Image (tube, rainbow, N blue to C red):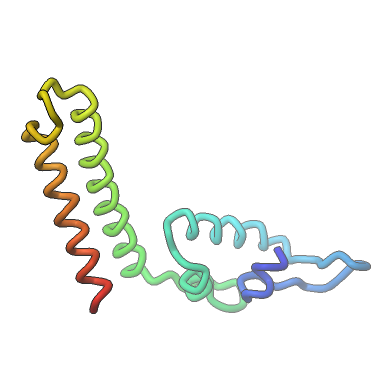
Length: 121
């Protein structure tokens, strides 16, 4: 809680002895923070969407973009999973002789080249 308070994501309303007191809505705000982190948003992005004074300022375009990013990741991971499952049961004498494994390898190489290009920009 202290970490989120230091980041400005939540605010205490006072103290009772050494214990900080929070508004009852802080639990909902913490749930929104957890949801945002699970979706892959940074704490800075979450802070921007939570806004000040407990008002949500969620950018719908940002949510849509994150959903598309998740869809892309899911597709890549599903293709990788399927390729690995095939490679595990493939009857080819060598993985390199298997056309399915070679396609998986080519996709991985293309992805590595794409990631390398993004880093150089």
